[in-house]
Amino acid sequence: MKCCVVGLQWGDEGKGKVVDILAEDCDIVVRYGGGANAGHTVVIGDARFALHLLPSGAVREGITCVIANAVVVDPEVLIQEIDGLAGRGIDLTGRLLVSENAHVVLDYHKKEDQLRETSLGDNKIGTTIRGIGPCYADKVGRSYAVRMGDLRDLNKLQGKLATILDYKNKVFGALYNAEPMSADALFEKCRVYAARLLPYVTDTTEFLHKAIAEGKSILFESAQGSLLDIDHGTFPFVTSSNSSLLGMPAGCGVSAKLLDRSIGVCKAYTTRVGAGPFPTELDNEIGQYIREKGHEYGTTTGRPRRCGWFDAVVASYSVTINSVDEIAMMHLDTLTGLKELKICKAYRLGDKLTTFFPANLDRLARAVPVYDSLPGWDQDITGATRFDQLPRQAQDYIRRIDQITGRAITIIGIGPRRTQTIFRRT
Image 1 (cartoon, rainbow, N blue to C red):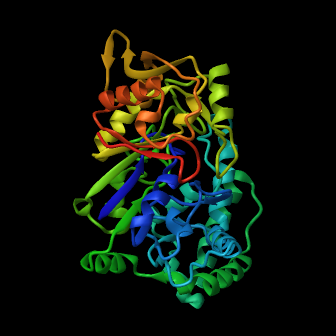
Image 2 (image 1 turned 90 degrees about the vertical axis):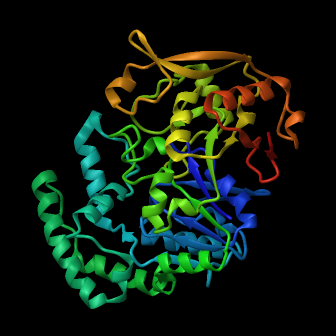
């Protein structure tokens, strides 16, 4: 089985839980894009794991974890995660592979991110200040890029870093009057990175194709969500990579034609972090209720997430561009206690209605949601094990989203634990 899990909204949909559950039947889990700006949470019993670079399958013994080409790797974060899991009895020795072609996030990327965001003032994008965008920019620019494989030749890397820092310091000084950074200090850090991480560095594309030839079961994991995709999201309020399923082939060198199954993950409502249009946003007591009940604060940054009604225009668009086969909906339990629920089924743009998401920022800013209203429920659903044990109102809510998106919701999350999951077949 070859399966891909992708977010259908603006990230934070609960992909970590879905990947962790599906990984039970897999040999390999592959993270194919993004960087340490992602935050995937896995809950096992009373234990909570927050992962930023490692695939969510890392917490399961025996799973081979792959960080593929298109991931930008922050060595400090990766070492912290490896050590953090080791301290909790989870050893990644022999089962973590990092692409030699993955680009490296270094201190000057983070500094550039912070300086640029600060200089933009009220017009800032709202990045996580993790250096992700500047690293991807250097990747595309090529001249000042560093990849994981470069850690193998420290003498050559030392010269490269001197050249890069000479350029970066001139830019930072001229544009922001910033203090220069030390190439020698950064090189000493890279010595440590090489010693710790080179045992994991390899050609992951070759590994994956050998695994495919051997009939291994592989799960591909996206980061962020489809509406944050650099090409298909709400630009410029997006991430710097192809965070949709469309990024999978380029991200790891495996054609999407080989997939047997693709699953889009969403919440039972909609959230986003940072700036940008959000048609169904609830900047009121209902939005605050959802935020507190759903613990809607960023795994990576701790920032409060903006909350709103379920946007089926967003979900349908992501279903379409990703060609997902089915939907996993998380956080249904968060809606318990609301008397009325709303589903956005279309946007009104002037005197016209559209059901296709307008990723263009100007059009989206003018979009007025058109809602279906459904009754809510008060019953505690966190102990349900079958779909027919949910209140009728919750079942109707799920079925209405099935109808609008054209895809069945086959996995329903009713709490953070693995066991708090309903598997539904229609």
